[in-house]
Amino acid sequence: MRGHFLVQKYIQGAGIISECGAFLPNLDGRLLLVADAVVMPLVFEKLRKAAAEARLELWKWNFGGECSEEEISEVKKFSIENNIKAIAGAGGGKSLDTSRMVSHQLKIPMISIPTIASSNAATSSLAVLYSKDHIYMYPVKIGRCPDLVIVDSEIITHAPVRFLIAGMGDGLSAIYEGEAMKTANKKTVHGTDCNPTSLIISRLAHDVIREKGYQAKISVENHIVTPALEDVIEAIIFLSEAGAEGGGGTAIPHGLHAALTILPEIKEVYHGEKVAFGILVQFVLEDRPLDEILEMQRFYAKIGLPITLKDLRIIDDVERKIHNVVKTACEPGRYVHNMPFSIKEESLFDAIMMADALGREFLAKRLI
Ligand SMILES: [Zn+2]
Image (tube, rainbow, N blue to C red; front, side, top):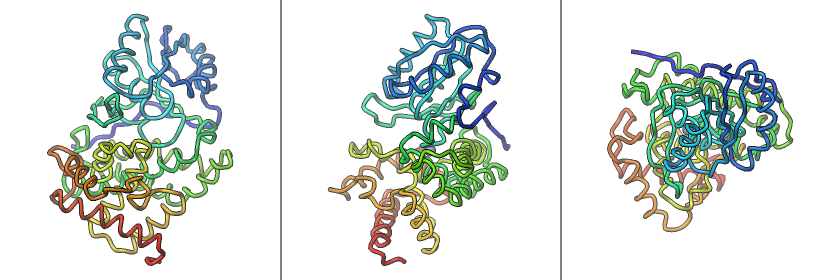
């Protein structure tokens, strides 16, 4: 069985939040905006005016910073007590995931407003739960993507460029993970087979990022909205997730990302940065030609994605830490087992160390 699982509506453009009224659910009730203290002033007033057009009164929830069971139950309680009819999450992945969980539990519409393009979480049907101490706990299968996604490229242009760079790492991975899963005959998160159309979408996301990623980076560094930037934002947020939902997108990169969160020093490293390094690890495990690895390293070096463990801030006591990471990554049921061959702790350890060694060779200019 094959399936496609997409957002209901996706709109993107400079200043689009002010113009989104016609796309909002027309509910004659209260819409709750979940956002932290930095994001709330960027979005609230613009969304309030647009919401009024859809007969929605905008309320706010000041997000505490982590998509944890505790925060979800507080937002849920508040929503029930105040008769909230729809929920919007604005910010990075975690405020969005918190809103997604509440929308799922209360069966109310969910609006996703990513203010950075650091991952494809805004359009996902999964929420990822973390402990209050920022440790990855478990994914929750919501089963459906958001009802509406609003991407204001003007806001993304003013966010730190490192977010966009991390998003490119996340967007690149869907094709490699999906192809591995299709070969392994693994199922998507929806229990469907990895379908070829979705893999073409993941490939397109990858190609757009490789082709226009550097221009997109320059655009954000200079706060200019360009067609290349719009294409890359769409590739990260919409295409790569649309591809992963129906084509599979969880193998070594996402498996490694989740396991790396056990290291305290990795807290400051973004999701897409860990995923990007995971692509290089998967390349080693797949025994891809050195030229292909080198080409990817060149792209990473050009835009600023990590190619060594040092880039991931894993500097001392490396072997012991990686042994612990690998142990977690290889627990039964984890994503690394979506590969078409068996993944053992030793082989994953060796691949991580080899990806790091190749990264150091690249930086020493011995691979060029
Ligand atoms: Zn991801």
